[in-house]
Image 1 (cartoon, one colour):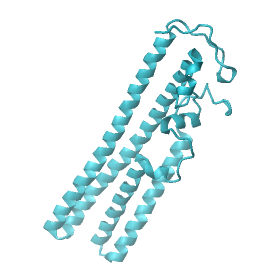
Image 2 (cartoon, one colour):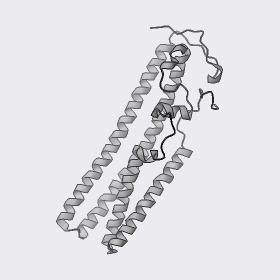
Image 3 (tube, one colour):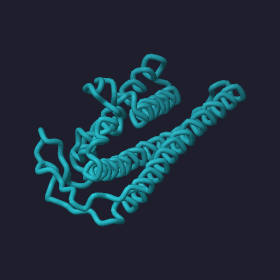
Image 4 (cartoon, one colour):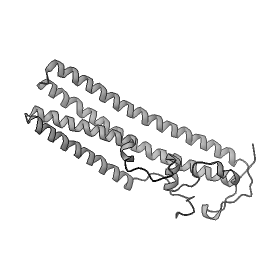
Length: 233
């Protein structure tokens, strides 16, 4: 293993001058692998939580179909749906909230790996052309390392991401619940569709407002200490 050069200093735009001891490289590598393991764990949990929600929703749909066939969409079906679907909706809300937490955790791990990558380049500046992810820890650099995003993200990105997909599906569940309730109140087909559509839109507005508040008001990582040269610290 190559020993780090203790005379290497941080460049002026990357923080205060730093000296590395003889064990620095081994410590950095250990921390890097720890962050990778933590990132794998949060990805696994995100997929597990999403799968649990989809499985619960699929089971609810099958159960509703069986009850509808037995009750011919009567009062028993309406009662069963109004008990079951709100539970599915709650599970969807909990899933979205946990996915938001997972995304914040993942951002922190990526920021840590960017900082370690910065240290690698201080130890061996000649390897910089071989890195495809950023070695800075500001917001844009973290996004680049997370998504390998060279261009601005699509306007549809909120609906492409897992929380956005779950939000749309969960809003459909809310709309379906309201429509079934309207059918139970004998509001007719037009009334049921109108009520369901209104509740769907209200649910989407709720999720969008909550997401905007999370982005603007919840700390998602550490203050950058190695910002890109063209961005302030």
